[in-house]
Amino acid sequence: MLLNNQKHPTKDQFRQMVASFPKNTPVTMVNILRFNKSVDGSGESGEEAYARYGKNVLPFMKSVGAKLLWRGRLNSTLIGDSEGSPQLILLVEYPTIDHFIKMTSDPQYVKISEDRTVALEYGGLWACQEEYSLLK
Image (cartoon, rainbow, N blue to C red; front, side, top):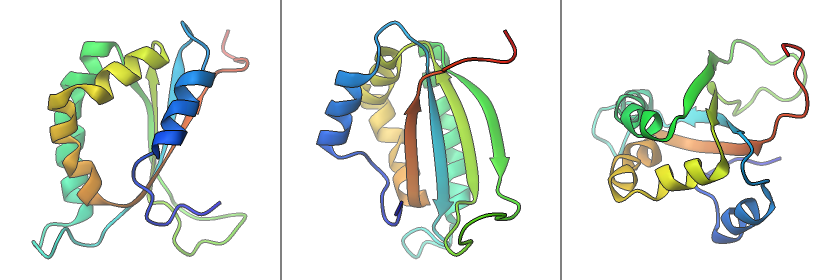
């Protein structure tokens, strides 16, 4: 799977997700992120721009009932090629796919998401449905 230069879904990817994800079912978005070393020659790092995005996205997440389940920095690659590996992985749960769509289509969210775009070398995103839980 190649993630190079991917930061946003294509229109077809977005349509397919909307059409195929079960309604009224929680969705966990798995974010696989690699940062740019610098942002447009500004001297700011991609991690700094993403930190600003992270701070600014919190009110939008709260407004739709989303929550950060887990955040972790990649320590080492045990299996596979480590070249170009992601640096950060996030798991964010939304009550339903419609909540995710509502948040990401809000014009004010779109404005703050520009920091996410400039921060990332790539940003893989997978919409996951819980299959079973050992915790239940």
